[in-house]
Image (tube, rainbow over all chains, first blue to last red; front, side, top):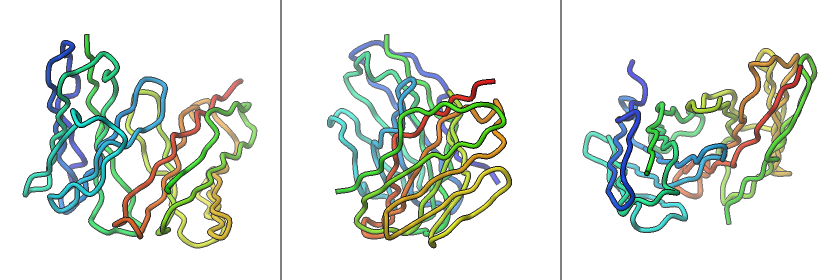
Length: 114
Length: 111
């Protein structure tokens, strides 16, 4: 069974540009979480999608947005990129409303803003 | 509000035992997870606790006290490869089962 897949693995953008990151959850999982992890720091919650709807968002500006498609894959968009947006962006998926099922992470997208 | 606290960094010696604590305040509680994350890699699942008590899995054990909003991860016979960040997460059933994450504890193992 395929795990959570993220693309691209690495992304280099110029300040002011837009970045689009993609995540495909494990088959059967309907919840997708997005996290930002700057170098040496902990996970910062960005967005949570479940059944196609945004359920919650972290303390990030509106230029961080996303969506979830009918097949439960998800996209994270970052507009007007700033240097401090450089980080590892991780996606995790879980079944909807699951109690004891852990979240499975993708390998992440390393975004570098220059 | 929802909050999970862990120490930022800990140092331990190879072969020793270390305990990493996690305290949480969430609207609801439907289980607590521990994850390991090596630098530059994705977090991987270590353990899950939903009832009070100790869950043992090889060199790693995890403890939960729901009344105290407290958990710890115990690592025995430390190896250099255990150098990593350890993340605590709580599933909040009062918030549509959202996972709430701590910032992680960076564990440094010295020879």
